[in-house]
Length: 421
Figure 1 (cartoon, rainbow, N blue to C red):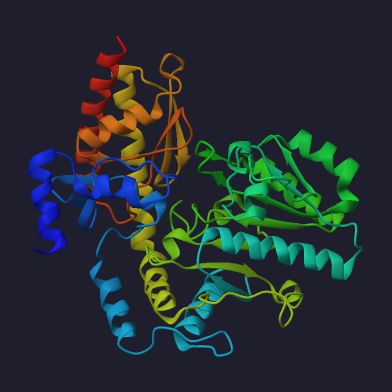
Figure 2 (figure 1 turned 90 degrees about the vertical axis):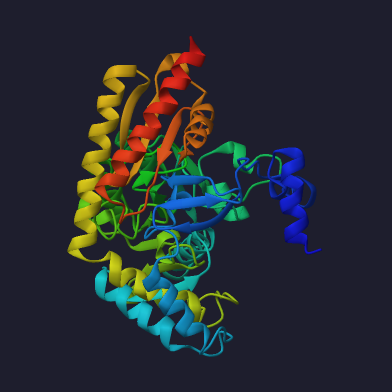
């Protein structure tokens, strides 16, 4: 009997997916996934191993930007898989060069470094910033300014730069030379630079904090950061791992904010589910990442880059970006109408198709409860901390699918409010 058949038979005995039970036996306990176990997807929809259908407003945490099993991505991945899977970094490859060309032609950047995750792209960006400061200025110009509630990855360096202590506690001493200030507080930034500006090598921020509550940066705040960096010889790094690749309605959110960073990091939707990330910068700065100073075994993988090249072709079009804007307005309007009836949210905020629904004070700390009820109503959502329900549907989602998602969410909200009485 095959393992698949025996597992299928187990379900009839327990009523719970045996795949979920297997998770608890064989996986490290750092995750606590939902009980449903996806088996396949198509477009904006997922089906679990029992055949139950779900509308996906989570998108693999803003990763599946073109939905599941996108036929154009399948075609390019399959074609590349028949040609070349991997080469070492002592060789280059055509898909990587083609994707790098597309990224530089579409952005401010001249040069690209490929890696596999947002953490790695941010690691590269931060190392580059310190290297530039060491090469151009002095050994004591290494201070990195970041912001409270930020999330920049899970490597030891990036988790230390991130502004959420829960992620860096319990691992011993953290790397030094990192400061954190309140997000969107320009006065605090000005005061910090007045005191520490000569030691600053970089400022890093998410132009809309994702994990930290889906909080957009103000135009005034990012303009202040740009001016301070210019004045003190520090580099401005935009972490667009979550906001990039069309999520905001522009290819990258900094375009809407009217500020050009020195380094930009991108991942998640760049591969639409196939692992890839990149750090983008200018010729003038890239020269400091000289031969042998950094590397990645799998960065620039031909299969990942082939998918990324097709993804940017699809996403960076007026049709797709306009759909993001239209569906965002539809979703926000529907959420606000829902809130008029149920008074469950204190605020609905975000950019494009990355939205955060902050729960009203009487429902504080219960975002995961609402997420679970949404799942029971056939709608996959996310949280962004204990107070915020996060939505990140595919960028090519349809008007009718947004309407269906709002219907399922209202069903969950009604259950939530009844349970809270």
